[in-house]
Length: 417
Image (cartoon, rainbow, N blue to C red; front, side, top):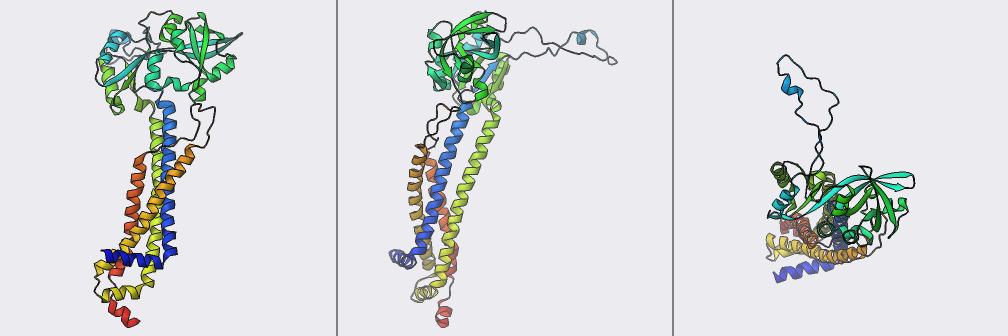
């Protein structure tokens, strides 16, 4: 084997320029594969995080709907009768979750649940002089929101915990605060859907990166929201559940819906479009990266083919002096793998440096306040995939020329010479 490696090295030296060009092709393919996957994965995590970080794995709520059982159906029951009902109004059922404390106690003892938080949601109007700006008030458990949903990452000014510690305080979406000309410490007026007007102190600004969302949203503590709506401490409109395994969300949501006799929606159903977008972008990234490596493999294949045609006499002499077809095949496979391994390690190193460089490029936009540089993922799995695929590509790129070289008849070549 040592002799075969020496012969392969001699043949590489004889075509040094072409071998370097082939290795550079592999290096370029690996570099772009690593850089592209790292950047696209980081971008996917950032885009999905804008929604998924703010979305519970399972949301328990009560939806106001019309009563499916109308009184007329109980009075006139006949095969020859028809019921014509128009303009059905919703029942007097409230939007609050009934027996909320029992549900919370059940969640606290569920081993599949990582945590949960209460929420009170209600439309509201923000008063700017004689103008009322429609918005939405969210009463939240701020400590749990910070722990489970990274709420503090989106509060650009102020301290999120202040809505719990400061009485009658509120955090406004940044576009909404700009529209109200409200800054930290200012007092704003809010009118509830019941028509009651309150004064609240602004203790922070919120910016999620979704402009339409931030234009209408505001956040207060659960206690403050209950007080504004004139409700008791048991009034809750939503329960946000964080699971230990996100994959279990669809099954658990159905289970909660039947168990608690309320509505429940899982994160996959609520954000199906984002999951689809992530999969499509990942497929494109892998497809482009694999294509680059295959193109590099064809470069090695062409160079080895040319080397075989130029070294016919050398191959014939090797076989005439006792080297078998398997030995000749091994020589050219060693040449191919040498080019592939050299290009692969160079590509992995340069790809890592290129990825580090991308992660340092400033990326400042008002839509994404928490992002300061371009998002990049340094997942070691990408380097493992690139290494394995480059070896496979270069092996097959050398296999077919090597097989052709092993079948050369030395008698015909020497006779022709």
